[in-house]
Amino acid sequence: MLNKRLAGFTPVFVFLLLMVNYIASAQQVKLTSFEPGAIWKDNNGVHINAHGGGILYQKGVYYWYGEHKVEGDAGNRAMVGVHCYSSRDLYNWKDEGIALKVSQDSTSDIAKGCILERPKVVYNKKTRKYVMWFHLELRGQGYKAARTGLAISDKATGPFNFVKSYRPNPGIMPYYPAGTPVSEQLNCKDTKNESETFFCRDLPGGQMARDMTVFVDDDGKAYHIFSSEENATLHIAELNDTYTGHTGKFVRVYPDQATEAPAIFKHNGVYYLIGSGTTGWAPNPARLLSSPSIWGPWTYQGNPCRGDGAKITFGGQSTHILPVAGKKDAFIFMADKWTPKNAIDGRYIWLPIKFEDGTMVIEWKDKWTLADIK
Ligand code: GAL
Image (cartoon, rainbow, N blue to C red; front, side, top):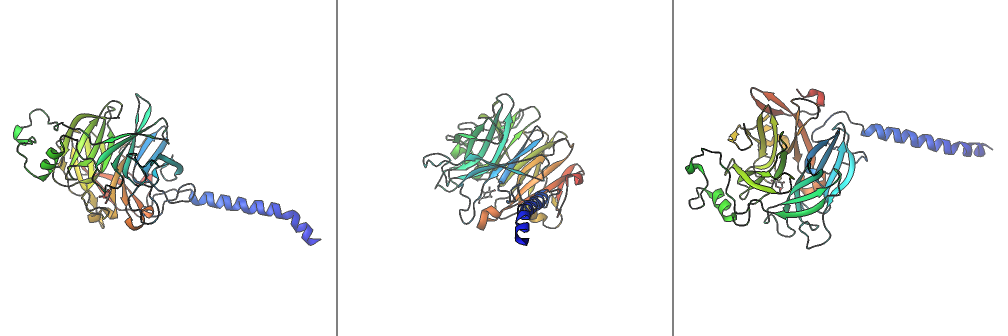
């Protein structure tokens, strides 16, 4: 008798239990702050897998693209592709799946097992296409290929179709603003240091393109910024109107100083470029350059980080600088805290950028919100 009565209650009880669980888990993932270096869970409760990433903002939605890492010792090889997440508030991220898949065809440039790093997506208003650029190393060749790769999609979340990979600007000398003395211009008949020698060596086939980002300026022009010349020098290279190729106009920035991990933004007419030194996965001091024009002159401004951990960029390496939509003067410095022994466990260090004494600084925060950005 008692059992019978209980049996009637059981489905109701189970339903209530499930509801409580559902509400609890939904509340668990509702985030209201950033915790740099912590586990960042997506809508499924899984740590976000978008390393070396960048963010595109469109119509109220942020799309975060990054390297999908796998568990264990695959190291940096791309076994899956580029992961995409979306968010309206920057704290809570929805898994949108793999936006660009590596190819199962072993002859493809993006064959599974290649190295596909630092993907960045921009939207082209003319063609209404989403354009993804990334650093590509062909499978089985280590970091020798040093190419840039291009993929295109009709939708922000993909699928992106791989188009081509190559080394930019073959046969083309750098751009120098009018009035630049000839003695300051690179001359392959009289190279002055190792990086110039690398540049001239690569002139016929195109320049090496490794760590990279893409930047769209206020006038709609886009630029590909990458470590070139065996990582010795950064190049800032103009993209064409559809953002799908290089125009051939480019400058060499901070030559021979070995800068990686470029990230860039513009504030009050000044361009700020943050990068790292070249110590692989190990963190090193960030470096800031600024310029009144994308073409330079770029001036080295030292390490923008302040306080404890500043000498190692708080354990991170720059990947992107995000202008916060609808908030004037609000920018987020995004960095990766790499964990090469188990790449999937890599963490994200996002910190607010502060403007001080005519420049910008980054300070550590255990926890912060968008309201903290001034
Ligand atoms: C880093 C670079 C990463 C990755 C790594 C490989 O310096 O920023 O994107 O290429 O080296 O060792």
